[in-house]
Image (cartoon, rainbow, N blue to C red; front, top):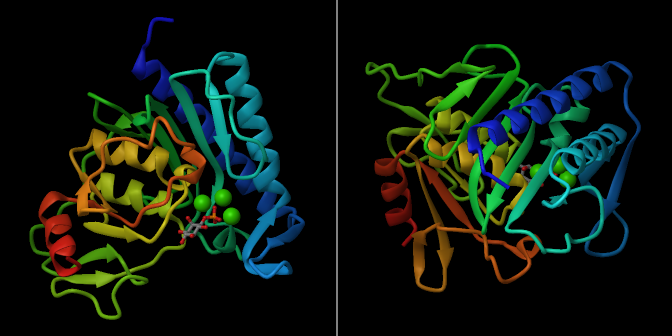
Amino acid sequence: MTEDLSAIAAMARELADLAGREMAEGLRRNPAVSYKPGAGGGESLRDPVSEVDQAVEVMIRERLSGAFPDHDVLGEELAGRPARGSRYLWAVDPVDGTANYINGFPLFSGSVGLLRDGVPVAGAVWCASSHALRAGVYHAAEGGGLFFDGEPVRPVFNPDVRRRIGGFVDASPRSPEGWEARRTGSAAIECAFIAAGLMEVARFERPNVWDVAGGFALVRATGGIIRILGEKGWQDFTRFDAEGDPGEWRHPVILGRAEAVERLCSLDA
Ligand code: IPD
Ligand code: CA
Ligand code: CA
Ligand code: CA
């Protein structure tokens, strides 16, 4: 197969857009909600899933297997690990921020990322809200810039703002000086907001590959940096483990503009 990353990213955009349309429509029908099993065996109120989460993943998988029959796919909602025969793995989070979604709280997203040998090289995140103050899809591919609904994104940057927004509430009881803390409830939306310049930095505790694959592609394509906490402390993220099971990948992550990431990592050293 000849690889055309910008065509692949355009496909990711289409899939994220489909997710967004289904989410918006689903919300109007009050979708059925259930709860996944928690650690103790009973339901976990922290892990809701709606019928839309499942339906969207089914649709995205169908579209992917039609377009790229030899690629592997990993998603949050459908059980089963990919065969891992391909160097290409799509990681899909059909609804990221389900707790926000089922409450109609407008910070949720749908994320699609493509890993090539474990490296997030293209991705798209549909966001229920955005720098353009409307819902839409951010997409990007390695070597290209960021787009919002197909238009190149001009990052939001007002030099008069001295106290910027960071997503690290879980990690630090107080905001480090110069940042105001926000936890949006959607890791993918925080990645997209960092890529678009709405947020400076974010920290995630132990995200799943589908939470961040699309978002990492956006952050990488826009010159942001990504660090993970490994055995030797904070280190540059290079790839999701290509040998092991990417579904088992779990690391604390700090990502964003370089200076902010350095500062946050040093506070946490
Ligand atoms: C959740 C979001 C959230 C993070 C949770 C995830 P989900 O994903 O990414 O930001 O804090 O840990 O589970 O379950 O709504 O797709
Ligand atoms: Ca979930
Ligand atoms: Ca998620
Ligand atoms: Ca999800």
